[in-house]
Length: 557
Image 1 (cartoon, rainbow, N blue to C red):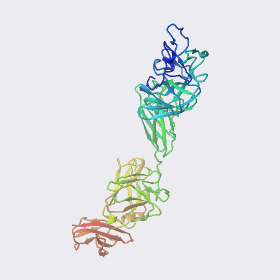
Image 2 (cartoon, one colour; image 1 turned 60 degrees about the vertical axis):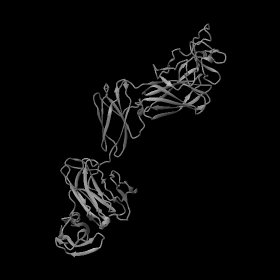
Image 3 (cartoon, helix red, strand yellow; image 1 turned 120 degrees about the vertical axis):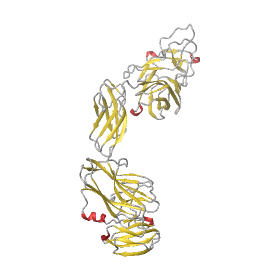
Image 4 (cartoon, rainbow, N blue to C red; image 1 turned 180 degrees about the vertical axis):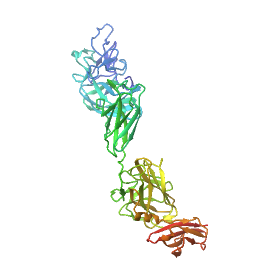
Protein backbone atom coordinates (compact mmCIF):
# COMPACT_ATOMS: atom_id res chain seq x y z
CA UNK A 1 0.00 0.00 0.00
CA UNK A 2 1.51 3.29 -1.07
CA UNK A 3 1.59 5.92 1.67
CA UNK A 4 0.92 9.44 0.42
CA UNK A 5 1.83 11.27 3.61
CA UNK A 6 2.45 10.88 7.31
CA UNK A 7 6.07 9.80 7.73
CA UNK A 8 7.92 12.10 10.11
CA UNK A 9 11.60 11.13 9.96
CA UNK A 10 14.29 9.80 7.62
CA UNK A 11 16.02 7.08 9.64
CA UNK A 12 17.75 5.22 6.78
CA UNK A 13 21.24 6.38 5.79
CA UNK A 14 21.76 5.92 2.06
CA UNK A 15 23.80 7.10 -0.88
CA UNK A 16 27.10 8.94 -0.66
CA UNK A 17 27.78 11.14 2.32
CA UNK A 18 27.92 11.14 6.09
CA UNK A 19 25.08 9.30 7.81
CA UNK A 20 23.94 12.37 9.70
CA UNK A 21 23.51 14.26 6.40
CA UNK A 22 21.36 11.58 4.71
CA UNK A 23 19.04 11.12 7.72
CA UNK A 24 17.01 13.45 9.90
CA UNK A 25 16.82 11.29 13.01
CA UNK A 26 17.93 8.05 14.58
CA UNK A 27 15.89 4.92 15.30
CA UNK A 28 16.75 4.44 18.95
CA UNK A 29 17.44 7.81 20.54
CA UNK A 30 21.17 7.05 20.90
CA UNK A 31 22.35 7.95 17.39
CA UNK A 32 21.88 4.69 15.52
CA UNK A 33 19.90 4.46 12.30
CA UNK A 34 19.25 1.91 9.60
CA UNK A 35 21.59 1.78 6.66
CA UNK A 36 20.88 1.05 3.01
CA UNK A 37 22.99 -1.22 0.83
CA UNK A 38 24.12 1.71 -1.31
CA UNK A 39 25.56 3.73 1.59
CA UNK A 40 29.11 5.07 1.08
CA UNK A 41 30.83 7.62 3.25
CA UNK A 42 32.50 8.89 0.08
CA UNK A 43 32.70 7.76 -3.51
CA UNK A 44 35.82 5.69 -2.88
CA UNK A 45 34.41 3.86 0.15
CA UNK A 46 33.89 0.11 -0.07
CA UNK A 47 30.26 -0.90 -0.52
CA UNK A 48 28.57 -2.84 2.30
CA UNK A 49 26.95 -6.25 1.76
CA UNK A 50 24.03 -5.76 4.16
CA UNK A 51 21.33 -3.18 4.77
CA UNK A 52 17.96 -2.05 3.50
CA UNK A 53 17.38 -2.97 -0.17
CA UNK A 54 17.90 0.07 -2.38
CA UNK A 55 14.49 -0.34 -4.04
CA UNK A 56 12.81 -0.25 -0.63
CA UNK A 57 11.01 -3.58 -1.13
CA UNK A 58 10.89 -5.80 1.94
CA UNK A 59 9.78 -9.38 1.28
CA UNK A 60 8.32 -10.80 4.48
CA UNK A 61 9.71 -14.10 5.76
CA UNK A 62 6.71 -14.74 8.03
CA UNK A 63 5.56 -18.26 7.13
CA UNK A 64 1.86 -17.45 7.49
CA UNK A 65 1.98 -14.77 4.78
CA UNK A 66 3.91 -16.19 1.83
CA UNK A 67 4.44 -13.63 -0.91
CA UNK A 68 3.63 -10.63 1.30
CA UNK A 69 5.87 -7.64 0.66
CA UNK A 70 6.19 -4.03 1.78
CA UNK A 71 7.20 -0.93 -0.12
CA UNK A 72 9.16 1.57 1.94
CA UNK A 73 8.95 5.28 1.25
CA UNK A 74 11.82 6.94 -0.58
CA UNK A 75 15.16 6.41 1.15
CA UNK A 76 15.93 10.07 0.36
CA UNK A 77 12.88 11.40 2.26
CA UNK A 78 11.00 10.79 5.50
CA UNK A 79 10.46 7.04 5.66
CA UNK A 80 9.42 6.37 9.28
CA UNK A 81 6.50 7.41 11.46
CA UNK A 82 8.68 7.92 14.53
CA UNK A 83 6.84 8.00 17.87
CA UNK A 84 9.09 8.73 20.83
CA UNK A 85 6.76 9.69 23.67
CA UNK A 86 3.58 8.27 25.18
CA UNK A 87 0.43 9.49 23.37
CA UNK A 88 2.56 10.64 20.44
CA UNK A 89 0.28 10.15 17.37
CA UNK A 90 0.66 10.23 13.61
CA UNK A 91 -1.50 9.42 10.61
CA UNK A 92 -0.43 7.56 7.49
CA UNK A 93 -2.68 8.50 4.57
CA UNK A 94 -3.00 6.10 1.66
CA UNK A 95 -2.30 7.38 -1.84
CA UNK A 96 -5.16 5.26 -3.15
CA UNK A 97 -7.95 4.23 -0.73
CA UNK A 98 -8.53 0.50 -1.00
CA UNK A 99 -10.28 -2.41 0.67
CA UNK A 100 -8.62 -5.25 2.54
CA UNK A 101 -9.26 -8.30 4.67
CA UNK A 102 -6.18 -7.69 6.81
CA UNK A 103 -3.56 -5.02 7.24
CA UNK A 104 0.08 -5.60 8.13
CA UNK A 105 2.34 -3.03 9.75
CA UNK A 106 6.12 -3.11 9.22
CA UNK A 107 7.54 -1.61 12.39
CA UNK A 108 10.17 -1.83 15.10
CA UNK A 109 11.16 -0.20 18.39
CA UNK A 110 14.55 1.29 19.23
CA UNK A 111 16.17 1.11 22.67
CA UNK A 112 13.50 -1.08 24.22
CA UNK A 113 9.99 -2.26 23.46
CA UNK A 114 6.99 -0.10 22.61
CA UNK A 115 3.23 -0.52 22.55
CA UNK A 116 1.13 1.22 19.94
CA UNK A 117 -2.50 1.54 18.90
CA UNK A 118 -3.77 1.72 15.33
CA UNK A 119 -7.03 3.28 14.18
CA UNK A 120 -8.04 2.31 10.65
CA UNK A 121 -10.07 5.16 9.15
CA UNK A 122 -12.54 4.34 6.38
CA UNK A 123 -13.81 6.63 3.63
CA UNK A 124 -17.36 6.54 5.02
CA UNK A 125 -16.21 8.20 8.25
CA UNK A 126 -16.22 5.04 10.39
CA UNK A 127 -13.14 3.41 11.89
CA UNK A 128 -11.82 0.30 13.60
CA UNK A 129 -9.44 0.55 16.54
CA UNK A 130 -6.66 -1.89 17.43
CA UNK A 131 -4.93 -1.56 20.80
CA UNK A 132 -2.10 -3.26 22.63
CA UNK A 133 0.13 -3.80 19.58
CA UNK A 134 3.52 -4.75 21.01
CA UNK A 135 6.67 -3.82 19.09
CA UNK A 136 9.84 -5.69 20.13
CA UNK A 137 13.20 -4.00 20.38
CA UNK A 138 14.93 -3.92 17.01
CA UNK A 139 17.38 -6.52 18.31
CA UNK A 140 16.49 -10.18 18.88
CA UNK A 141 12.67 -9.91 18.84
CA UNK A 142 10.27 -12.55 17.46
CA UNK A 143 7.88 -12.23 14.52
CA UNK A 144 10.23 -10.37 12.22
CA UNK A 145 9.56 -9.77 8.55
CA UNK A 146 13.27 -9.19 7.87
CA UNK A 147 16.44 -9.49 9.97
CA UNK A 148 20.15 -8.82 9.63
CA UNK A 149 19.79 -5.47 7.89
CA UNK A 150 22.46 -3.76 9.98
CA UNK A 151 22.73 -0.25 11.33
CA UNK A 152 24.99 2.79 11.29
CA UNK A 153 26.22 5.28 13.86
CA UNK A 154 25.21 8.84 13.11
CA UNK A 155 28.15 9.98 15.23
CA UNK A 156 31.08 8.31 13.45
CA UNK A 157 29.50 6.53 10.41
CA UNK A 158 30.57 3.14 11.74
CA UNK A 159 28.44 0.37 10.26
CA UNK A 160 27.32 -2.75 12.11
CA UNK A 161 26.08 -5.85 10.28
CA UNK A 162 24.38 -7.13 13.42
CA UNK A 163 25.89 -10.56 12.98
CA UNK A 164 23.55 -11.30 10.11
CA UNK A 165 20.47 -11.45 12.35
CA UNK A 166 19.99 -7.90 13.65
CA UNK A 167 18.50 -5.28 13.62
CA UNK A 168 14.98 -6.41 12.70
CA UNK A 169 11.71 -5.10 11.31
CA UNK A 170 8.59 -6.82 12.64
CA UNK A 171 5.25 -7.72 11.05
CA UNK A 172 2.05 -6.87 12.93
CA UNK A 173 -1.30 -8.20 11.67
CA UNK A 174 -4.56 -6.22 11.93
CA UNK A 175 -7.66 -8.26 11.04
CA UNK A 176 -10.54 -6.09 9.86
CA UNK A 177 -14.08 -6.88 10.97
CA UNK A 178 -16.27 -8.51 8.34
CA UNK A 179 -18.45 -5.42 8.22
CA UNK A 180 -15.40 -3.30 7.38
CA UNK A 181 -13.79 -5.51 4.77
CA UNK A 182 -15.70 -3.93 1.91
CA UNK A 183 -14.98 -0.35 3.05
CA UNK A 184 -12.26 1.77 1.47
CA UNK A 185 -9.39 2.48 3.85
CA UNK A 186 -8.46 6.18 3.86
CA UNK A 187 -5.74 6.34 6.50
CA UNK A 188 -4.29 4.73 9.62
CA UNK A 189 -3.69 6.72 12.79
CA UNK A 190 -0.99 5.26 15.01
CA UNK A 191 -0.14 6.34 18.55
CA UNK A 192 2.44 5.21 21.06
CA UNK A 193 0.63 4.00 24.17
CA UNK A 194 3.37 2.36 26.23
CA UNK A 195 6.94 1.14 26.57
CA UNK A 196 10.34 2.79 26.93
CA UNK A 197 11.47 2.34 23.34
CA UNK A 198 10.96 4.55 20.31
CA UNK A 199 8.33 3.21 17.92
CA UNK A 200 9.06 3.36 14.18
CA UNK A 201 6.45 2.40 11.58
CA UNK A 202 7.83 2.03 8.04
CA UNK A 203 5.14 0.58 5.79
CA UNK A 204 1.68 -0.92 5.49
CA UNK A 205 0.73 -3.91 3.40
CA UNK A 206 -2.53 -5.77 3.06
CA UNK A 207 -4.28 -8.97 2.24
CA UNK A 208 -6.53 -7.58 -0.46
CA UNK A 209 -10.03 -8.83 -1.04
CA UNK A 210 -9.69 -11.93 -3.18
CA UNK A 211 -11.01 -12.30 -6.67
CA UNK A 212 -13.94 -14.24 -5.24
CA UNK A 213 -16.65 -11.63 -5.69
CA UNK A 214 -19.36 -11.14 -3.09
CA UNK A 215 -23.13 -11.55 -3.49
CA UNK A 216 -25.26 -8.39 -3.46
CA UNK A 217 -28.84 -7.37 -2.63
CA UNK A 218 -29.13 -9.74 0.32
CA UNK A 219 -32.68 -9.81 1.71
CA UNK A 220 -34.51 -11.73 4.42
CA UNK A 221 -38.15 -12.80 4.77
CA UNK A 222 -38.43 -14.01 8.37
CA UNK A 223 -41.25 -15.91 10.01
CA UNK A 224 -41.46 -16.59 13.72
CA UNK A 225 -39.38 -19.77 13.37
CA UNK A 226 -37.45 -19.49 10.10
CA UNK A 227 -36.08 -17.12 7.49
CA UNK A 228 -35.87 -17.24 3.73
CA UNK A 229 -32.78 -15.37 2.50
CA UNK A 230 -32.08 -14.46 -1.09
CA UNK A 231 -29.39 -12.54 -2.92
CA UNK A 232 -28.03 -11.60 -6.32
CA UNK A 233 -25.05 -13.45 -7.75
CA UNK A 234 -21.94 -11.39 -8.56
CA UNK A 235 -20.89 -10.86 -12.17
CA UNK A 236 -18.43 -13.72 -11.76
CA UNK A 237 -20.51 -16.33 -9.95
CA UNK A 238 -18.63 -18.50 -7.41
CA UNK A 239 -17.79 -22.03 -8.51
CA UNK A 240 -18.74 -23.66 -5.21
CA UNK A 241 -21.84 -21.67 -4.25
CA UNK A 242 -22.28 -19.69 -1.05
CA UNK A 243 -21.73 -20.10 2.70
CA UNK A 244 -23.83 -18.53 5.44
CA UNK A 245 -23.40 -18.02 9.15
CA UNK A 246 -25.87 -16.55 11.66
CA UNK A 247 -25.98 -15.76 15.35
CA UNK A 248 -27.86 -13.77 17.97
CA UNK A 249 -24.52 -12.07 18.65
CA UNK A 250 -23.32 -9.23 16.44
CA UNK A 251 -19.75 -10.56 16.58
CA UNK A 252 -18.88 -11.29 12.94
CA UNK A 253 -17.27 -14.53 11.77
CA UNK A 254 -13.65 -14.55 10.68
CA UNK A 255 -12.31 -16.02 7.47
CA UNK A 256 -11.60 -19.27 9.36
CA UNK A 257 -15.04 -19.55 10.98
CA UNK A 258 -16.90 -22.64 9.82
CA UNK A 259 -20.17 -21.73 8.09
CA UNK A 260 -23.45 -22.99 9.53
CA UNK A 261 -24.82 -23.79 6.10
CA UNK A 262 -24.14 -23.54 2.40
CA UNK A 263 -25.81 -23.85 -1.00
CA UNK A 264 -24.41 -25.05 -4.28
CA UNK A 265 -23.35 -23.15 -7.37
CA UNK A 266 -26.16 -21.29 -9.10
CA UNK A 267 -28.44 -21.24 -6.04
CA UNK A 268 -29.29 -17.78 -4.70
CA UNK A 269 -31.78 -18.61 -1.93
CA UNK A 270 -31.62 -20.49 1.35
CA UNK A 271 -34.20 -21.40 3.99
CA UNK A 272 -32.96 -21.43 7.58
CA UNK A 273 -35.30 -23.21 10.04
CA UNK A 274 -35.17 -23.60 13.80
CA UNK A 275 -35.14 -19.91 14.76
CA UNK A 276 -36.71 -18.36 17.85
CA UNK A 277 -39.62 -15.94 17.69
CA UNK A 278 -39.18 -12.26 18.57
CA UNK A 279 -35.41 -12.44 18.19
CA UNK A 280 -32.85 -10.30 16.38
CA UNK A 281 -30.44 -12.30 14.24
CA UNK A 282 -27.18 -11.34 12.56
CA UNK A 283 -26.44 -13.15 9.33
CA UNK A 284 -23.38 -13.19 7.08
CA UNK A 285 -23.14 -14.55 3.54
CA UNK A 286 -20.04 -15.12 1.41
CA UNK A 287 -19.10 -16.59 -1.95
CA UNK A 288 -17.20 -19.87 -2.10
CA UNK A 289 -14.81 -20.00 -5.04
CA UNK A 290 -13.21 -23.30 -4.13
CA UNK A 291 -9.80 -22.58 -2.67
CA UNK A 292 -10.68 -18.92 -2.24
CA UNK A 293 -13.46 -17.58 -0.05
CA UNK A 294 -15.08 -14.16 -0.42
CA UNK A 295 -15.66 -11.71 2.39
CA UNK A 296 -18.59 -12.15 4.76
CA UNK A 297 -21.41 -9.75 3.83
CA UNK A 298 -23.68 -8.83 6.80
CA UNK A 299 -27.45 -8.63 7.17
CA UNK A 300 -29.60 -8.11 10.28
CA UNK A 301 -33.19 -9.28 10.60
CA UNK A 302 -35.72 -9.92 13.35
CA UNK A 303 -38.16 -12.79 13.57
CA UNK A 304 -41.73 -11.73 14.36
CA UNK A 305 -43.74 -12.90 17.33
CA UNK A 306 -45.20 -16.36 17.23
CA UNK A 307 -48.83 -16.20 16.13
CA UNK A 308 -51.61 -17.16 18.55
CA UNK A 309 -54.06 -20.01 18.35
CA UNK A 310 -57.65 -19.25 19.32
CA UNK A 311 -59.50 -18.45 21.51
CA UNK A 312 -57.52 -15.44 22.71
CA UNK A 313 -58.21 -12.68 25.24
CA UNK A 314 -56.40 -9.58 26.50
CA UNK A 315 -57.34 -7.17 29.30
CA UNK A 316 -53.89 -5.51 29.78
CA UNK A 317 -53.99 -6.25 33.51
CA UNK A 318 -50.75 -8.26 33.55
CA UNK A 319 -48.73 -5.33 32.20
CA UNK A 320 -46.14 -4.09 34.69
CA UNK A 321 -44.90 -1.16 32.62
CA UNK A 322 -47.42 1.42 31.43
CA UNK A 323 -47.17 4.56 29.34
CA UNK A 324 -47.35 6.18 25.94
CA UNK A 325 -46.78 3.66 23.17
CA UNK A 326 -46.24 0.82 25.66
CA UNK A 327 -48.24 -2.27 24.72
CA UNK A 328 -48.09 -5.99 25.51
CA UNK A 329 -45.56 -8.11 23.69
CA UNK A 330 -46.28 -8.69 20.01
CA UNK A 331 -48.68 -5.75 19.84
CA UNK A 332 -47.81 -2.65 17.85
CA UNK A 333 -48.96 0.96 17.87
CA UNK A 334 -48.84 3.37 14.96
CA UNK A 335 -49.03 6.97 16.12
CA UNK A 336 -50.91 9.60 14.14
CA UNK A 337 -51.25 12.83 16.12
CA UNK A 338 -51.47 11.17 19.54
CA UNK A 339 -50.15 7.83 20.77
CA UNK A 340 -52.12 4.95 22.21
CA UNK A 341 -51.31 4.75 25.92
CA UNK A 342 -51.53 1.92 28.41
CA UNK A 343 -52.75 3.26 31.73
CA UNK A 344 -54.49 2.57 35.03
CA UNK A 345 -55.76 6.15 35.29
CA UNK A 346 -59.30 6.73 36.51
CA UNK A 347 -59.39 10.39 35.43
CA UNK A 348 -61.74 11.10 32.48
CA UNK A 349 -62.04 7.36 31.88
CA UNK A 350 -61.65 4.09 33.72
CA UNK A 351 -60.82 0.47 32.92
CA UNK A 352 -63.58 -2.03 32.30
CA UNK A 353 -61.63 -4.70 34.16
CA UNK A 354 -59.18 -3.12 36.60
CA UNK A 355 -56.50 -2.08 36.80
CA UNK A 356 -55.29 -1.44 33.22
CA UNK A 357 -56.71 -0.45 29.86
CA UNK A 358 -55.66 1.32 26.65
CA UNK A 359 -56.76 4.82 25.73
CA UNK A 360 -56.26 7.43 23.03
CA UNK A 361 -56.27 11.16 23.80
CA UNK A 362 -58.28 14.02 22.36
CA UNK A 363 -57.02 15.99 19.38
CA UNK A 364 -55.90 12.91 17.47
CA UNK A 365 -56.69 14.46 14.10
CA UNK A 366 -54.43 11.99 12.29
CA UNK A 367 -55.64 8.48 13.08
CA UNK A 368 -53.61 6.15 15.31
CA UNK A 369 -53.77 2.37 15.16
CA UNK A 370 -53.61 -0.21 17.95
CA UNK A 371 -52.55 -3.51 16.33
CA UNK A 372 -53.14 -6.88 17.98
CA UNK A 373 -50.69 -9.75 17.70
CA UNK A 374 -51.17 -12.24 14.87
CA UNK A 375 -53.69 -15.08 14.92
CA UNK A 376 -53.63 -18.39 13.07
CA UNK A 377 -56.73 -18.52 10.88
CA UNK A 378 -58.10 -20.99 8.36
CA UNK A 379 -59.55 -19.97 5.02
CA UNK A 380 -63.37 -20.00 4.94
CA UNK A 381 -63.81 -20.08 8.73
CA UNK A 382 -65.77 -17.31 10.46
CA UNK A 383 -63.91 -15.52 13.28
CA UNK A 384 -65.07 -12.81 15.66
CA UNK A 385 -62.98 -9.93 16.99
CA UNK A 386 -64.58 -8.20 19.98
CA UNK A 387 -63.68 -5.44 22.42
CA UNK A 388 -65.26 -2.81 24.67
CA UNK A 389 -65.02 0.96 24.31
CA UNK A 390 -66.03 3.95 26.43
CA UNK A 391 -65.77 7.71 25.91
CA UNK A 392 -66.30 8.36 29.62
CA UNK A 393 -69.21 10.73 29.18
CA UNK A 394 -71.92 12.05 26.89
CA UNK A 395 -71.40 15.81 26.88
CA UNK A 396 -69.56 17.84 24.28
CA UNK A 397 -66.25 17.11 26.02
CA UNK A 398 -66.68 13.39 25.47
CA UNK A 399 -67.71 13.00 21.85
CA UNK A 400 -65.92 13.47 18.54
CA UNK A 401 -64.32 10.09 17.87
CA UNK A 402 -64.26 8.12 14.64
CA UNK A 403 -63.23 4.50 15.09
CA UNK A 404 -62.90 1.62 12.67
CA UNK A 405 -61.71 -1.98 12.83
CA UNK A 406 -59.10 -3.08 10.30
CA UNK A 407 -57.60 -6.46 9.44
CA UNK A 408 -54.41 -7.30 7.58
CA UNK A 409 -51.72 -9.94 7.16
CA UNK A 410 -49.20 -7.57 8.71
CA UNK A 411 -49.28 -4.81 11.31
CA UNK A 412 -49.64 -1.97 8.84
CA UNK A 413 -52.44 -0.02 7.20
CA UNK A 414 -51.02 -0.75 3.76
CA UNK A 415 -53.37 -3.29 2.24
CA UNK A 416 -55.62 -3.42 5.34
CA UNK A 417 -59.36 -4.12 5.00
CA UNK A 418 -62.07 -2.18 6.85
CA UNK A 419 -64.36 -4.42 8.91
CA UNK A 420 -66.66 -1.73 10.28
CA UNK A 421 -67.14 1.50 12.21
CA UNK A 422 -67.70 1.16 15.95
CA UNK A 423 -67.98 4.83 16.88
CA UNK A 424 -68.83 8.07 15.11
CA UNK A 425 -68.32 11.69 16.26
CA UNK A 426 -71.89 12.00 17.54
CA UNK A 427 -71.66 9.09 20.01
CA UNK A 428 -70.66 9.30 23.68
CA UNK A 429 -70.93 6.64 26.39
CA UNK A 430 -70.87 6.59 30.17
CA UNK A 431 -70.08 2.89 30.43
CA UNK A 432 -68.16 0.42 28.32
CA UNK A 433 -70.03 -0.68 25.21
CA UNK A 434 -69.19 -4.03 23.59
CA UNK A 435 -68.48 -4.17 19.88
CA UNK A 436 -67.69 -7.10 17.62
CA UNK A 437 -67.04 -7.83 13.96
CA UNK A 438 -66.77 -11.07 12.06
CA UNK A 439 -64.07 -11.91 9.55
CA UNK A 440 -63.70 -14.82 7.15
CA UNK A 441 -60.11 -15.05 5.85
CA UNK A 442 -59.77 -15.75 2.12
CA UNK A 443 -56.59 -17.79 2.64
CA UNK A 444 -55.10 -19.69 5.54
CA UNK A 445 -52.47 -17.67 7.37
CA UNK A 446 -51.73 -15.17 10.13
CA UNK A 447 -53.99 -12.12 10.50
CA UNK A 448 -53.83 -8.98 12.65
CA UNK A 449 -56.64 -6.66 13.80
CA UNK A 450 -56.35 -2.92 14.38
CA UNK A 451 -58.48 -0.43 16.28
CA UNK A 452 -58.08 2.68 14.13
CA UNK A 453 -59.16 5.92 15.84
CA UNK A 454 -59.12 9.63 15.08
CA UNK A 455 -60.78 12.49 16.94
CA UNK A 456 -61.34 16.21 16.89
CA UNK A 457 -60.18 18.54 19.63
CA UNK A 458 -63.18 18.09 21.93
CA UNK A 459 -63.26 14.63 23.62
CA UNK A 460 -61.08 13.61 26.50
CA UNK A 461 -60.04 9.95 26.23
CA UNK A 462 -61.46 6.91 24.47
CA UNK A 463 -60.89 3.76 26.51
CA UNK A 464 -60.46 0.25 25.07
CA UNK A 465 -60.49 -2.89 27.21
CA UNK A 466 -61.22 -6.62 27.34
CA UNK A 467 -60.50 -7.81 23.79
CA UNK A 468 -61.07 -11.29 22.44
CA UNK A 469 -60.79 -13.27 19.22
CA UNK A 470 -62.73 -16.51 18.81
CA UNK A 471 -63.57 -18.90 16.04
CA UNK A 472 -67.25 -18.58 15.14
CA UNK A 473 -69.78 -16.06 16.43
CA UNK A 474 -70.12 -14.64 19.93
CA UNK A 475 -72.52 -16.12 22.46
CA UNK A 476 -76.08 -14.73 22.48
CA UNK A 477 -75.49 -12.67 25.62
CA UNK A 478 -72.49 -10.97 24.05
CA UNK A 479 -74.33 -10.18 20.84
CA UNK A 480 -77.26 -8.70 22.74
CA UNK A 481 -75.13 -5.95 24.22
CA UNK A 482 -73.80 -5.03 20.83
CA UNK A 483 -77.30 -4.94 19.38
CA UNK A 484 -78.33 -2.30 21.90
CA UNK A 485 -76.39 0.33 19.94
CA UNK A 486 -78.98 2.90 18.80
CA UNK A 487 -78.89 5.23 15.82
CA UNK A 488 -81.05 8.21 14.84
CA UNK A 489 -81.96 9.29 11.33
CA UNK A 490 -81.91 11.55 9.53
CA UNK A 491 -79.10 13.53 11.10
CA UNK A 492 -79.18 16.50 10.66
CA UNK A 493 -83.00 16.52 11.03
CA UNK A 494 -85.83 19.02 10.54
CA UNK A 495 -88.71 18.23 12.92
CA UNK A 496 -88.63 14.47 13.57
CA UNK A 497 -86.07 11.69 13.96
CA UNK A 498 -86.39 7.93 13.66
CA UNK A 499 -84.94 5.88 16.52
CA UNK A 500 -83.64 2.40 15.77
CA UNK A 501 -84.33 -0.59 18.06
CA UNK A 502 -87.16 1.36 19.66
CA UNK A 503 -88.50 -1.79 21.33
CA UNK A 504 -85.41 -1.80 23.59
CA UNK A 505 -85.52 1.92 24.41
CA UNK A 506 -86.84 2.91 27.84
CA UNK A 507 -86.50 6.71 27.57
CA UNK A 508 -84.88 9.53 25.61
CA UNK A 509 -83.58 12.72 27.24
CA UNK A 510 -82.82 15.76 25.10
CA UNK A 511 -80.10 18.21 26.24
CA UNK A 512 -78.71 21.37 24.72
CA UNK A 513 -75.02 22.05 24.06
CA UNK A 514 -74.53 23.29 27.64
CA UNK A 515 -75.75 19.96 29.04
CA UNK A 516 -79.11 21.32 30.31
CA UNK A 517 -81.85 18.69 30.01
CA UNK A 518 -84.73 20.15 28.01
CA UNK A 519 -87.13 17.21 28.18
CA UNK A 520 -87.35 13.46 28.79
CA UNK A 521 -89.68 11.18 26.82
CA UNK A 522 -90.60 7.90 28.50
CA UNK A 523 -91.36 4.93 26.23
CA UNK A 524 -90.91 7.00 23.06
CA UNK A 525 -92.33 6.08 19.70
CA UNK A 526 -90.03 5.12 16.86
CA UNK A 527 -90.77 8.48 15.23
CA UNK A 528 -89.85 11.18 17.73
CA UNK A 529 -91.11 14.75 17.23
CA UNK A 530 -88.63 17.50 18.07
CA UNK A 531 -90.40 20.32 16.24
CA UNK A 532 -90.40 22.51 19.35
CA UNK A 533 -86.61 22.79 19.31
CA UNK A 534 -84.80 25.71 17.73
CA UNK A 535 -82.09 25.08 15.14
CA UNK A 536 -78.83 23.98 16.76
CA UNK A 537 -76.87 21.12 18.31
CA UNK A 538 -78.59 18.74 20.75
CA UNK A 539 -77.70 15.55 22.59
CA UNK A 540 -80.09 12.62 22.84
CA UNK A 541 -79.32 10.35 25.79
CA UNK A 542 -80.98 7.00 25.15
CA UNK A 543 -81.60 4.70 28.13
CA UNK A 544 -82.20 1.07 27.19
CA UNK A 545 -84.45 -1.36 28.98
CA UNK A 546 -81.37 -3.24 30.24
CA UNK A 547 -80.11 -0.07 31.96
CA UNK A 548 -77.35 0.86 29.51
CA UNK A 549 -77.16 4.39 28.13
CA UNK A 550 -75.67 6.08 25.12
CA UNK A 551 -75.62 9.64 23.91
CA UNK A 552 -76.02 10.68 20.28
CA UNK A 553 -75.31 14.15 18.95
CA UNK A 554 -78.01 15.52 16.66
CA UNK A 555 -78.23 18.69 14.62
CA UNK A 556 -81.56 20.40 13.96
CA UNK A 557 -81.66 22.43 10.80
